[in-house]
Amino acid sequence: MALMLDVDVRRKLAPGPAPRRVVLADLRFTMDDAEIVALVGPSGCGKTTLLRMVGGLDTELDGRIGWTVGARPVIGTVFQEPRLLPWRTVRENLALVRPPDAAFAAGLVDLLGLSHAIDLYPPALSLGMARRVAIARAVAVKPALLLLDEPFVSLDPAMAEQGRLVLLDAWRARRCAALLVTHDIAEAASLADRVLLLSASPTRVLRMVVVPEAHRRQGLAAGARFAAAAI
Amino acid sequence: MTARRPRAAPARLLRIAERVLPSLALLLAWEFAARWAGNRLFPPVSAVIITLAVEAASGRLAYHLGLTLARVAASFALAMIGGCALGIAMGRWRLLDRMLDTPLTTLLNMPALVTIVLLYVWFGLSEATAIAAVALNKLPSTAVTLREGARALDPALAEMAASFRVGRWAGLRHVVLPQLYPYGFAAARSGLALIWKIVLVAELLGRSNGVGFQVQVYFQLFDVTAILAYTLAFVVVVQALEWLALQPLERAANRWR
Image 1 (cartoon, chains in turn cyan, yellow):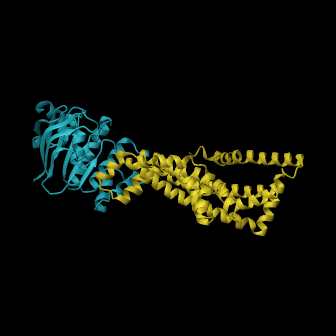
Image 2: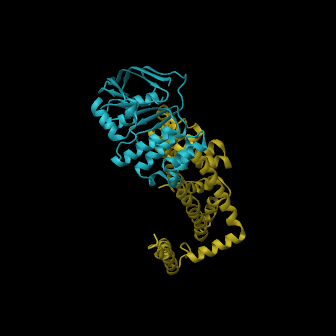
Image 3: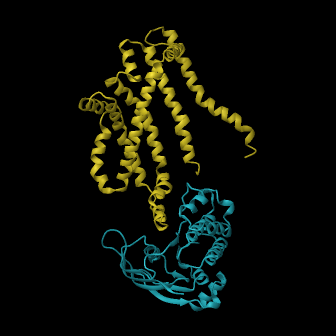
């Protein structure tokens, strides 16, 4: 494990005309190169904004997103909505991001149970399937960092649990750093190595909780128990 | 699916009949009304078709129709390429939109006849002038349609493409253009209808061949039968373009729906 990312946001303003609301203030955290960090906070607290800044989609900030590896590494993003191209098949959607290793990408398709849907257009997929395609796409680029923005929101509990298992499968297939935004503290505790609890806006880190090795990735129920006891 | 299959063939026949029968009825009504009127200036459809056959046999129809179609194709291509480029650029860059909005609206409201006459006066009665004048009549409405499309591009997909570092060309091809296809088809459809009408005006005013020129010649001879024969030939060709080119292309682009 080596330090990969050093986030230090002194101030981030909401876009739009003045007076602009302060979204993030004095928010600091670091990430190692193979850990899963979960960000948990009330809705509207700027978690998505933070992910966009880390992903380089929003560069207007007072502070810095510091990469120890130099430039921004390869990042795979799973957005809140799947954001697939509806006019391209699943196969074409995956090809769009030019996976560097075709065999690895094909293996992911099998692993995530997408083989039978590979030639379908996204409008024909259920939301759960579309989310799995989005996860496959993000992992297929062999990212150094995965950004996950509420990837299982608005799925029923069984589908969400399946999604989490699929995500962990994909993550184990290729260990990389992952930054997960969620409002569900049990989900955070069941997936992450560390959980950062965020305040309401202007957002900063209230508390950092390390999930002990024995409790890591033991399923949602174990995550919920740990969260209830320690968070 | 299987339950519906036995009915599929008759349903298809019915759909074709729905399209064809009313037109056939109109043609029959025309035929009988003209025979009843018995006036040289209102010929029956059978006479028109015979004239059409005579013109076709002489080679005149193919010559004039071919020239007109070539002009339609050239000005259509110019108007679509120029109008799409301008419209997309104006939809993406607000400064350009503010700068060009007034000239575009002016051009949009310019009567076709004025554009044609002015260009003929300034640049001479040449083939290039005719084609440019027709294209200039269609370009503004294409630009306005595509500007709407470019304004409606989904920023979420653009962000996805940026986050995955999809290249400029691949992004255009897979992310941007498919969102613009419906607008492009709308512009192409109305463009075809508009352009072939304007081409005839441009031919009538400043060319010595083409359907428009022939219409003028037969107008001077008060030969309504020949005028209708050329019109009929043209309508059939444009309708065939709609059925054989535009609609299959649109279906292919909408396969995913």
